[in-house]
Length: 388
Image (cartoon, rainbow, N blue to C red):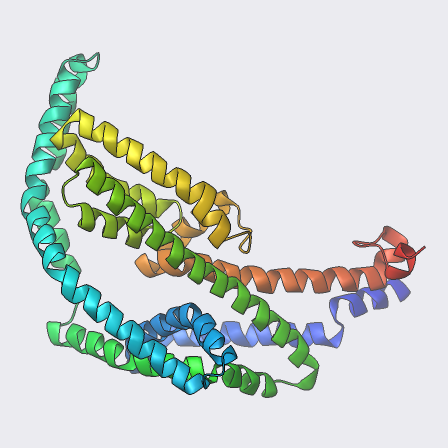
């Protein structure tokens, strides 16, 4: 009985029963929701409308909050610092767009117009290479298989695009969502920069006193993890875009600014992003000449070397401490579950979950040491033993 009571105290006693009942109630709630989910469609529409500007505001908050804090340290009131930064960033972005938009627009239009021709030329080049290689004997068989399975490829692509557009109710709804995001994003960002600490304090005060210190610690760790990741990824992606743009200009690759922007945007996604970004550059370089492909390879290797050895170690540091294999698995799972949003937010979401699981594990170790450490050994040596 003694062992049983010790075990019950270890797992939480009455708290365990309360937790199990809570899980059962949550399960019943999910089951009921699955049966009457249509009732919540208006709520889901509202959430889908306000979620994008909130996410953008949080990302911008993590980027701009250190600057606001710095201005506050030099005796500029926080509200004026926020206004100065928002107006300054807005003016800077507007100026960059106005200056670079014509060149980017011309390149994008030209690239969209000529890209099918690039693909066709690359296909002819690959076909000629295969026919003259050791794989030439299998070319006819493979060609017939491709024709039989993908002869109607344009029609398949058109049908897929048509089905995709069926999911968009109408253009007016999409435009409305974009307008709402553009208008509400600066407002949400302003109040996040101004009152983020107050929001956190208010939320903590809503909790029972015994949980406040634990929740405060968890929120702090989550804030550090996500903030470091977002700041680091944006800076690293910007550096990659700038370095590639310079490299593409040096080697004379067509559509340099467009390809550099694609690389910068996709580099926000670790590991998979750079792989996606290099594909259009390879196609364009390959059609130009094999020598251009070699120059592209040199530029890409140089940029990846600089990013991996100088930019990322100094910007990202070791804050995340996530194994590369874990990152790839998280991206694949999150992308399969939530699409492009999952790919973008998968790593920050994993970081939040990791903070929570790590904290619960530390609590478990402490509880185990208290109840079973003397008999079965400690996870960590007690302080009184370490001092002897």
